[in-house]
Structures are given as C-alpha cells and as structure tokens.
Image (tube, rainbow, N blue to C red; front, top):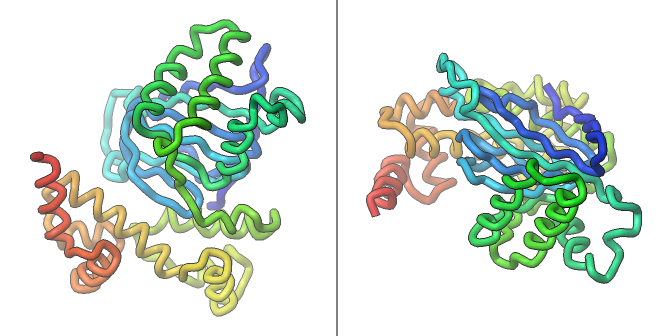
Length: 295
C-alpha cells in the first residue's frame, strides 16, 4: 500500500471541482494530488491523516490542504466491522482547485494578496475553526444551489474569509520538509506512511517497511530520521497512542483490551509509552476526559 496519486477530472462548465461524498464509511486510501483541497465533514467520526499528523475528526471538521499533501479520512476502526444499512453515515463536501484555475497570474493581483499568501502557507494544511468555520460552512453548503458564476464568486469569498481569519486558522502539519523533497523521495515517504496507517494497530515489521523504501533496515532508519526528524518507532508509537486516546474517550473497555487493540504488546509497555507521550497515565487521561465532558 502506498500514497496514491489521485487524478481529478474537471467538471463541465466549471474551473474547479465540487464533489459530494456519501458513503457508509470513508474508505479513500492515503493519497495526494496537485490540487488544493477544501474538505468539510458533514457526518462521520474517526481519524484524519494529513502528512505527518493524525487527529480525530467529527462533523463540522473543516480543513484546507496544500497541493501534493498526502491525506485520508478513516472512520473509527471498530466501525469497519459494524453491519449497517445507513449508507449515508459518512458524508463530506470537497472542493478541489489548482493554483492556476483562474489563470497563471490571477492570484498575483493586489486584491488577491491575502489569498496568495494563504495558498503559499498551506503546504502542511490548515484546520479552520471558530466563527470563520461557521461562515465558511454556510457558504460551502449553499454552493451546489448556485449557478456556475455565483459558485465561482462564492469560492473566492470562501478563500478570502479563510485568508483573513487570523487565529481561526490553525496549521496542521508543521513538518513541511517532507513536501519539499524530490518526487522520488516524496513517493518513498508516502509509501511508508501509508503502510503505517494500514498496520499500526497490528505488528509492524521493520523489514517490510525497509523493503517498501528499497533500503536495508539500517539505511532506512537513518533516512527516515533525517527526513522526518523522528524515529520510525516513535512514529508508530504516536499513531498507537492517539488510537488509544480515542478508545479511552469513547468506550469503557478495560486497559488491557485498549492496550492490545492499539497495537501494544503488553500493558506495562503501553502504560510507559502513554505516560511518556501524554504526560499522564491512561487512567488519568480517561478520568480527565470524562470530567471535561461533565463540565
């Protein structure tokens, strides 16, 4: 499994793509494309993977992703095995547009300076929150009812709102070095992340990952640390801890069950790694989360 290059077909009578996603669960693979992407989650919950970053997503989740930034959304893994007749439990509205969708020099105009700066800084993606999120969501939901010209004007207004949103725009993946690599290295790193995303709750084999990178295990470990500024083991651990956090928040499962479901081999190691990463034990984390929910 690797991060795949997605080919986006332009719509008739439109310079950008507006797509409604309606599924029983989000199942798109870890992928990237040369277009910018603005995604609004309408329904569904799970994990959002953007570049090096993993976080939970919920309805209302709104992100702007830069060109060639690998990403995917996955419903909670316990939902994958749930038989359901609800074919609409995973819904999203997605906009794709290229840097030059209005011409090579359009965003160089003085009136577009803020939007140009936003796009230049979106290499690692932005999460849009607060009042700006509310305004952009309203605009996006109305897009499909507009004629092509009004839809274009609305998209420009959406980009302007985001570009002037200040603290409502939060950077997602600040480790931008991966996306400045050669196409060969970018493809190699994306293959590695795709493997981890697919396997982090199971046993991860270093020899398999090194093979994906076409390297020896020693050379791969050096290479990965140089590119990502973290070890491969720490990356896998990070994914597992965030998966455990979701289980601690959303279930009453005992610690030993959460430990194994998150990919850890024994409870002692799970507790140690969780405390090191979260600065509190799993039990303390569960207690704090539930106290916040009561408040």
